[in-house]
Length: 382
Image 1 (tube, rainbow, N blue to C red):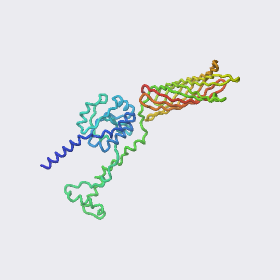
Image 2: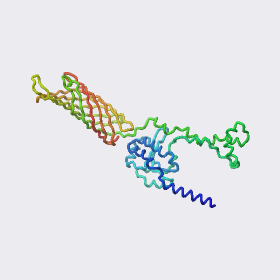
Image 3: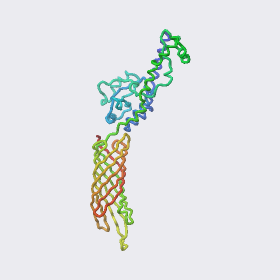
Image 4: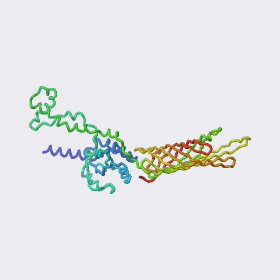
């Protein structure tokens, strides 16, 4: 009786001491929370899995929901400010890769049930209940090798004899015929459960699957940029043909995740001092004004960078002013181009791009190479 009471007291003290420690060290979850804030829930799921593997035994959580459309999960997390209690893990629904959203880590099922009242109202739904972390954690590394070599439990009547028989049976097994040695022959069914996880593909193989596209698509993208332009025609006769001052304004309305309609206006300016045939000084000013529209194709992955290709057509006005006399030429032009948008936040990013413009003039055609760098501002979300 004293031994039983003593064991209960020691166990209770050990449980109380363990409860005083953090369930999972905050630094172990820091990487997953950082990736959630950066808009990478797939990477966050892998980081949370790594943090909870080996630490989640005995813990409970509240399952908020399972999302196969990652955009909906991101929108849900952003709406409540990505609190530290949220974490995600990879799930599979009918063979389709999805993500499960969970709330909190608790030492017991009772504590998790009480935490339901503290969840944000937008996360609550009928039927939510605590679940064990070990039940929702995807399979990880296989069990250690020594688990497969442990002897099976012996029948109660032969308990004193079975342990030494398990230790000595392997070298004797080919010659033994007694019932005592035949007991280990039943070992394969007993050790089969630990070997079962090896039949399941480990989590580390999941990145080979095509990842879902978690980044939202803005309704409108407006770009304001500095631009420089080089004209092959104006570079003849000793000039450099470079318009060092310029600007680009563009607006893209996204019809889908990849296709958008673009409208653009740009201006470029150059001036130089030269001499006429008589040696008198001349001030020569050139300017270009372009208005174009067309289609843009954008590749949006799961990161911060989106690359695009576009094909525009429109109108270019070329102006030339020499000693106060101004001449203008209007011509049709086509302008294919490439560019990158680097997202700094959900609404602001950096924009760089390069275009080739072919101006179909009355007297001669001109080729122009243009570059730009500036800021892109996103509004709305599809």
